Length: 141
Figure: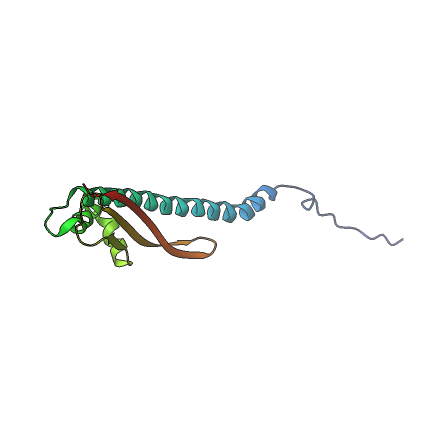
């Protein structure tokens, strides 16, 4: 009589490595999601910093009608002292711009608008870049 011996593989039915495989599949997704949240948080922090700097610059322009160099020079100086030195240097090298309208001092009640345009990039899933703009308007006193 010829009997065929079947080899059994007792390890095939076990679940020993299943959790490790699931972890290996899910970990990259979790890491990329964390990095996306982190980079969006950094971009939002930059927006808050420059919005505050624009407000400080507009206020400085509004109260500095007789300043040396005019209200716009005083506003730019106030903006540079509001933003941290390292952040301002990096953003200037990447193309940050400050716009002051109107450029020359006017009469009391003239509105001064300070705009700051700063380039930004978010690189997580895809590379997104653009220009973040913050502006503020104050009346000249």
